[in-house]
Image 1 (cartoon, rainbow, N blue to C red):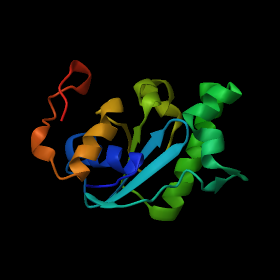
Image 2 (tube, one colour):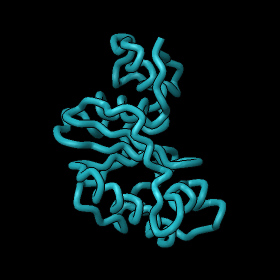
Image 3 (tube, rainbow, N blue to C red):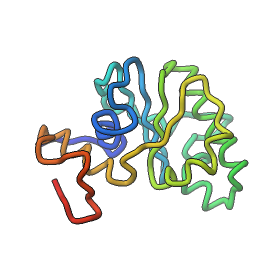
Image 4 (tube, one colour):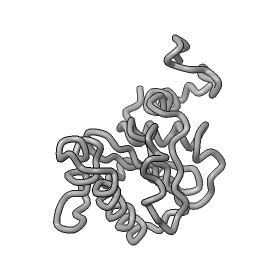
Length: 160
């Protein structure tokens, strides 16, 4: 049995089969949803439980201003919300100097609507496995990668 948090699971999937595959250096998976989850990888190896959504940025916890829930709850425009998200990403850059940011979570399907406003030193890319990343990563954490192929789609009834 394996225990892994949701951001770490999504990051494992993205680093193994998605946007971070074969990425060297430091990569940070940022999941945006009801909160903000993060997973940090060094040369493809997970540094577990590096949840950073509770970092204080501009006097407030990052997830209170920059999560998807915060955007919807406060009725923030894309411009307002990305200003908060950029503050969080800049703080992560200041602390850990990543070589790549991967943005996941449900809002990542809207990546093109907000990515241009996020000017970071590290490249910023959308997660490629979408909402399937968490479940795929959970299977990876259990050491059963052979039962899932990146071409399988979970929403089409192909389950690991």
